[in-house]
Length: 161
Image (cartoon, rainbow, N blue to C red):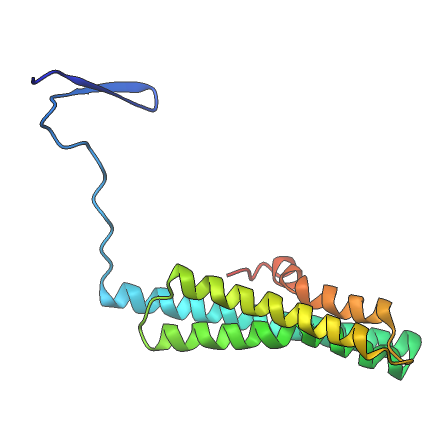
């Protein structure tokens, strides 16, 4: 029962006996120094992203105020806050996890993303249901879009994490 097993990898084929272990690469083992360096870089990337999103939100609020006045600025603030606030809370959770040395699991990341999405939808639904006469929808959507695309600023300055 020791028949050869043919394994195709890339353009070459290797022959193994049935009892041999497959040639899987060894897992990468990081030293504590490498782990702390990676955590520091990840933390810097998270903070950079938040700063870029905050800056883009302020730009949206300023442009809305300049073009259409105070109601548009308040609407842009609501739109920017709909995404920035939950994103900042999720980033804070990730930063605390990085500083504590813990690893974020896939499930905690999923729940964080679900929280961000739910908060944004809840904020926009509340703005729609409040039915205020002063809400300027284009400005609200402009504020939301600017914060959502805050990473474009990092892309422009080549500072992506």
